[in-house]
Every structure is written in structure tokens, then in C-alpha cells.
Length: 183
Image 1: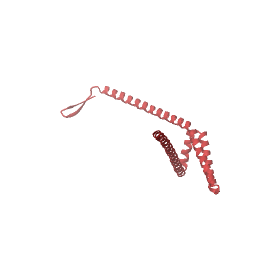
Image 2: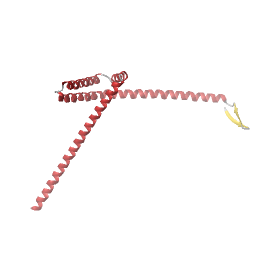
Image 3: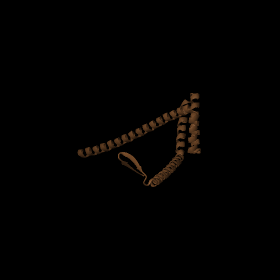
Image 4: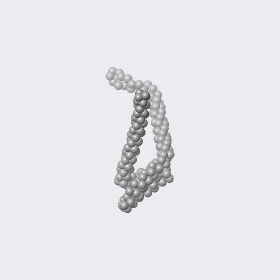
């Protein structure tokens, strides 16, 4: 369909209006097919990414379980400092047992099962979930800070040892030169 102006009036000419409708239908159909294909590809991509992430987490869950178990061991060891306070020691031991149980659950269950359990707990008890997340975040921050402090200490010790070794080498070289001058 063509559009023209004659004497300032907008007029439509009916030349090829059937062709125009056919082109419009073809373009609309092609756009719909392209949108459907893009949607399908997007869904496939998301499903693939989710499967890959779940696979990665399943492979890494043994190391996560080991980390939780290590924290439980550290907690149990620090609980020995409370031998004179049985209530505190019982609380620390109970927390260590809970962490050991969590480590076992992590090893025995899939990521999808663990995620569903956490999500269900968060929905049922949002306050407890927020408190647990806060405590876990605090413990993680302390662990990371402690690890960083240990790494910094080791780096400083290595630097100090290198410096001492270089000073001894310089001293020996100076002693050797002084001995040669005196001879």
C-alpha cells in the first residue's frame, strides 16, 4: 500500500495492499519464530549453567565437608579449656557434634537436596536463619582474618630470615676482606 499527499490531503492508494499484508504476516511470523528460538536457547543455556553449577558444587562438597569437620575439631579442642566449667564445655561439645553431623550430611546428600533443606528452613524460620547466617558470617570473617594474620606472620618471618641470611653473608665477606688486608 502506498501513501501519498495531494493538495495537502493525506490519501491512501490501494496499490498492492495484498502484498503489504503478506509481507507483514511474513515478518510477524519470522519474528515470532526467532523469539521462540531465542527463548528456547535461553532456557537451554540456563539449564546447562544450572547443571554445571550443581556438578561443580557436588564435586566441591567433600572439601566443604572437610572444612566443616576441621572447624568442629578446632571447636572441640578449644572446648578443653572449659573443663572447669561443665555447662560451657557441654555447649561447645554440642556445637562440635552439630558441625560433625553437618559435615556428614554434606557428604551424604546432593547439592539440590541441601539447597532445598536450607531454603525450607529459611522460609519456616527466617529469624533463626538470619541469626545462623550472621553467626556463620562472623565465624567466616574471623577465620579469614586469622588465616590472613598467619600468612602475614609467615611472610614476615621468611623476610626476616632472608635478611638475617644476607647480613651473615655480608659479615663473612667483610671478615674475609679484613683478614686479607691484615696479612
